[in-house]
Image 1 (tube, helix red, strand yellow):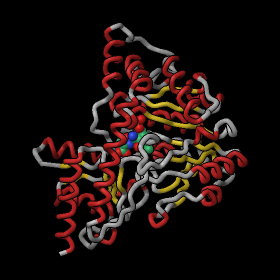
Image 2 (cartoon, rainbow, N blue to C red):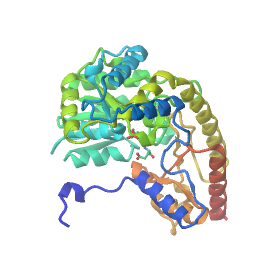
Image 3 (tube, helix red, strand yellow):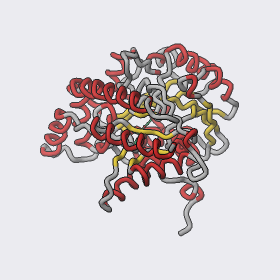
Image 4 (spheres, protein in one colour):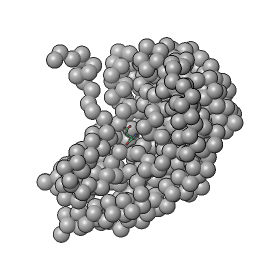
Length: 393
Ligand code: PMP
Ligand code: GLU
């Protein structure tokens, strides 16, 4: 088969590959514990299920406007106005088939050959792939575990060159859990605005921050920098609605129009009745979100405690999202020389699936998801501890 260079150059999503591998092994009867893909184990809010079923039964099963149904766009825009004083209305809001599609469509609308995009590292697996797919080059800005993966504004702005079209932010971060502080965020946005560079802020995990920390959304800066700030969000994590495939973006009018046209030729629109469910989640799902936040906090504390007891593993408690990103390189050896081999070793010897740090640009680490039940998490961590203890003997 002769594939386009574009298709030939793209790899399978590492997070989804781990999920697939764990599923295959399970199907063969192997007792696998998956701390791989970040997929909430919670049920979607009952209000969302009911509203979607009702819409489906009522025959709300036709195409909708390409950018999504007006009520949902208005509700999303309203949320950002209320929470962050953002200037956006429904006409600057697009509902997409997951945040992944929002990010992809943004890449298609903005990037082409020779462009550069600044991406803080460790980064979520799909950013570099999507950027390269559009012919552009991701430029990594390293953050370090010893600084709590803090992203320094000066480092970001130093990486901005004449070819830079955008800076891709992800706070709370997948995989590190780091949250960008309000002052750092403002310095990055102001510096980018001066240089005519967009800031795309992926806030998929915005509701999941721990220890009472508050989350500064880039939306707070959109009134001051309306041509610079783009926010991407998702229903997947906030409301445990991964399979519904609903996300969104808000940003400058010309960009939103371009994305809407791209969407009109790709997905047409997100699924009609799913959007009715999302609307109900947004209006009445807060109780469910609060319960999830409390549960994730408990799991975060458990992971932190159990990883802290493992020799050779170093991990700071993640501030947000639902991943731990321990440094494990001191456990590498001749038989197991990098994060891919180490993750493979855990799969074989401990029957626990984790994602190799290399997929996020950090080969000294592996990523563990704690979006699973406490029981699963505890059992998975016990197995990892036993496998590590055996390695050290
Ligand atoms: N951004 C980040 C940082 C993610 O971890 C994910 C995966 N959930 C996405 C975007 C995409 O989410 P979805 O397409 O399910 O909305
Ligand atoms: N975003 C989640 C993760 O990083 C789900 C898988 C994916 O969409 O890549 O595990």
